[in-house]
Image 1 (cartoon, chains in turn yellow, blue):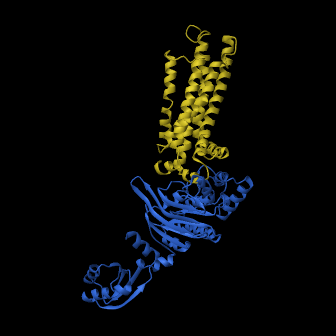
Image 2: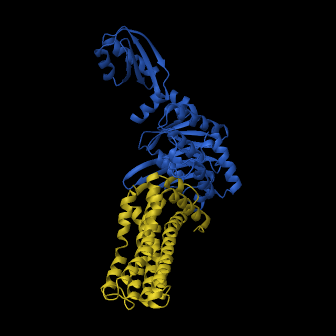
Image 3: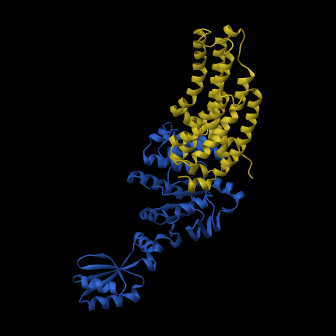
Length: 249
Length: 304
């Protein structure tokens, strides 16, 4: 088996980044969610604190709210890659650029790795940037209430540790979905469905069926990593040049 | 340079290419003709190691397309112009070529030189920084040809290079292919345009899932399956037409005083045709054999 050429894979990813730069909608979709979570939730907390302890958020309930809001970065890690990963594969299908790409000396694995990198880097950077904004604003809001900086803490740390694995899983699922559909919108809509299990976990935690504690998050990270590896191999099987040229319609 | 023997491709129960045996010489421009669904693109894809063969053998140079270790080497030595140009419309002409140059281990300087050479050669240098999506069809096709040549390949596969181009753009592309021919590259060209094949190709093959005929355009025009006779009469009527059809000949052209009849062996068949016409009341003034065009031969073979 040929050794994977990382430079070729990176060339594919770098080319995708150039295309994304010119496709402003792809970037907007990617950055809006983390920005909203990063800015809006601290504002909501500030508003709740301003309303006073009897009707709004108080020092006792504040950590619970902040932990609950930070879980949205976990959801975002599942949702955001759908926009980019589905575009990067379906976009190639629409432009019919896969055949000339497949005629180069690159292996299927290198192309897939390049697509995985391009689908992973921007959403992950957006989530981390959003989380930094979130933590900074939350600390501004909470320092006076709690008397200490609540962020960063192990809870959000564990969420940000799980985020790359969720992103990876989401990218691989979207590559599989993209191989079965013909337009970007359908791919993105179907890709969003891959986020449903994570919404399920979030709702379960809100209903008290699942505790979003550090131990459970680490277990979850391990489980997601195993699934992501399995899904990578499934997408590797799906992403075969003969399959792409003869069956991808 | 390109050799196939009994090359076959099946998709389930459908046979796309059957027992194709052909040899393309080094430095030759070889035309691949055939109707839609004849297996031209499938053959090109097999030769470019994009899809696997079902049986038979195929070699590019000394490399076997069925051997996975050789496939990388084949992809390095070939250039492919696909049926759909498949450019990255958001990227500039320069970036499109630069992207592909990276896969062939061309260093930055070599890439720059090659891109400049190709874009200047194809008249696109002034547009190098413009997005490919803003280009006309002809410019896109030229850019796709440049992409196929970015690594200076010895063997070039051109799938319908002038399809859907306006006459001027088609001529530019044809002229460029002729220039590549002078550089002694081995080119396999698939086309529907018989005139184009006749102008560019050293030899052509007619494919209809199986190989129907192969040879130089001149040889094919002279082949028995492509011969025609013109019969000059005092007048042509339905009785004469019926009489000719009745003895099994096809009339391909009719005027009020002449008929063009497809024949296989005029020396043997002319007396029977003459006899049938006379019996139907016709008066033959003279008979001549007329030269077939490649189009006549092609139509006869693919319909046959």
